Amino acid sequence: MASNWLVGDQAALAAERILDAAGRCFASQGVPSTSIADIAREAGCSRPTIYRYFDDRQALRLAFVHREARRLGAAVTAAVGNIGDPAARFVEACLRALAGVRASPTLAAWFTPGGSAIATDMAGSSAVIEAMAGTLVGNPTDPDHRDRARWVVRIMLSLLAMPGTDQRDERQMFERFVVPVAVASIRAPSV
Image (tube, rainbow, N blue to C red; front, side, top):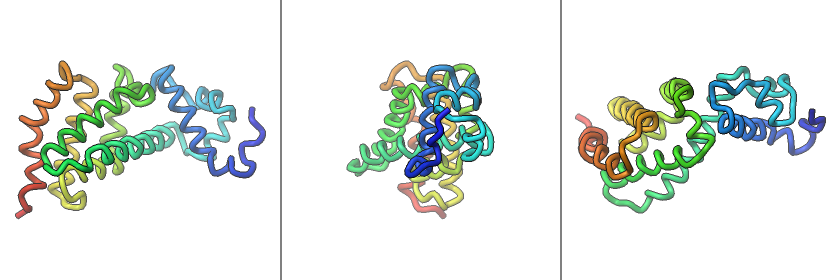
């Protein structure tokens, strides 16, 4: 075990180091199969050290999901920031988010047959993911927009668990079925 976990700058980086180790474990073993002991071994620390930073496995998973969602969200926002049309920006953001999850072994692991139920539970209860989706459909503090954002999250989870035939197929699904509802909230003021 590493004896210098709480020395100097490492104290501030310990949670990140644990989350990095968790990501490697998720990618190699799958999310449901990864235990706290596996993560501790990968991080080079003890299980009690992990519990100093995370109350339990669920809290660690949620912290990992939030960190990765923020990273992916920032990359997607930067990539679509110059698209003026709300519908085009929305579709491109959704497709880039799907591609980003699929391209990342640590995120794709959440959408394997055993992991998708855990991912659905995490995303369905995540205020961070809901807020990020809310920015795509308008004002995330508006109750109607929050409902639309929650619906968009469910669509995204569905496509991650059961992908379309290709990106063109998924683009058409978004443009034809999702944009008329989700993006209508951006274009038309709430009554």
